[in-house]
Length: 361
Image (cartoon, rainbow, N blue to C red):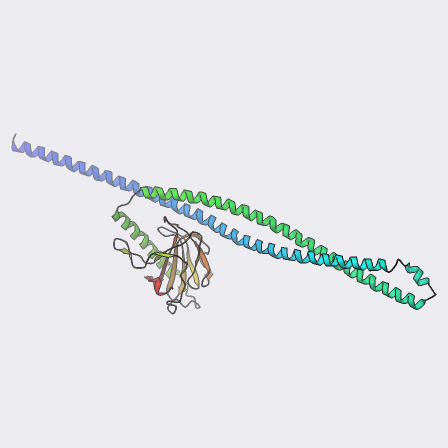
């Protein structure tokens, strides 16, 4: 075979291989694109699931508060009812005693006593004594009627509170069932997300994008924050603040997260529904869902200091609310696609993450 023919055949073979590689690359790009689209759809669904759980969890929290109030009211009404019942029994005994005394003194005809001219002095004393007894009986009867009215009112209130308590319990049971359904839906979404496995490089890119998104969001919040005169920041509170929730430290500040990325805060394991409390007084800057961090609350403490609380089940405060040290601001959860419940917690100063252990003990 001539050399030119061999060269042509080799060139054709190389072109065929190049086309095969191009087709393989195009197929891979299409697969990556489809996975990205599917993951985006699943992450959007995860956000919906988290927000649905948050709404029900917050409603359950409010219902529990109402239950406590109603139960306390029932205890107070029960005490009042017992006290009024004792008072009623005492008044009944006193009236019975008075009636018995009146009966024992004889059934004197009042008109005959007045017309009796034999002993006018005795008649006057008897009439005065009868008047005294009658007035006393009337007063005790009035008190007795007042007690009966109060007892009836308290009994009615007691019945109304019992009915309200039963309704709240039924509402709570329905909310718990809804919460269970929403959690099942979220579990299915997370399971679907896990099937779309990412390479280490893709996982790193994902975490990097989420962290950059958080930093950008916090920068916007810092720029929008109003200077509060009474917010002094955290500079003088090192090693004086309490952790926002009690639990085991799962990830510490500065430890390796993925690739070159490090933890900018801490992850504290805690039971679902536990109260998350603000470390110091401040103003709520952010209260919403954030990709990678779930339901997040950010508190401005003044002088460039902010604290962040993520992966919550429900947020109890809205943007603009003032909060005091130790006030509940959220409920522990596992939003944002977490496998187990816990709180992600950060402290930042002038936009830079600092070690929370320097402030909390």
